[in-house]
Amino acid sequence: QVQLVESGGGLVQPGGSLRLSCVASGFSISYYYMAWYRQDPEKQRELVASISNSDSRTNYADSVKGRFFISRDNVKNTVTLQMTDLKSEDTSVYYCNTDSQTYNWGQGTRVAVSS
Image 1 (cartoon, rainbow, N blue to C red):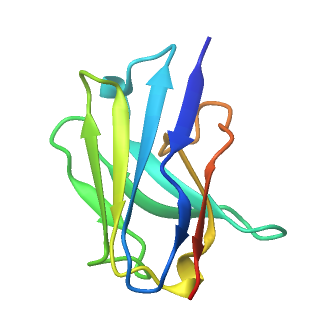
Image 2: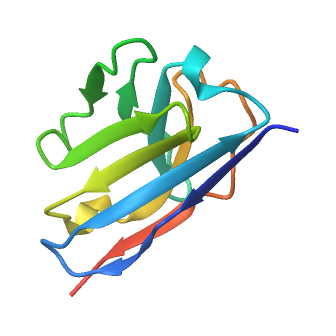
């Protein structure tokens, strides 16, 4: 059974940092480009960052470039999103999936940036 389980969210002040983790089971992430997304209620899901499977090339949305950093561990079957210099507009629910959104979405992890 395929599962994507995100964790690491929370409440943080502007300028703070959080580290999100995604543990995949039921498939090997080594075959896929993986990505982090975020979605607010009544808004479309937004691609935040992606990472290739072969050489870990990364790509970021302009809004997070230079502040967020995606990484992967194919042995542990995990994808991580290090978020720094967080802003109020980063408040959202964050999800991971393949870059083609192959699998059912997990429950996500909520990030709230507020003073």
